[in-house]
Image (cartoon, rainbow, N blue to C red; front, side):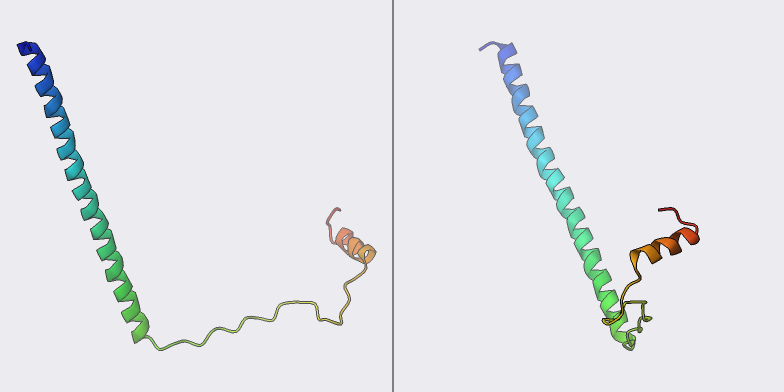
Length: 92
């Protein structure tokens, strides 16, 4: 092997070693970031649960009665409905 061949081989080895180190440090950065996110979510959940426990439970708000059709009620005939739509300014 010539000196030039040894230098190339050493350069390839150095490059591979550097890539492995970068991968390890990148993984540790990702692990630290994900741990920080999980810790923050746990803290916020604890705060929300404490706030909900401190507040008295509220009664559910009753919804307004909607204009639903009663079982025995018939809908208007199609012709009547179309006439009301046209007289109301709608085009069909």
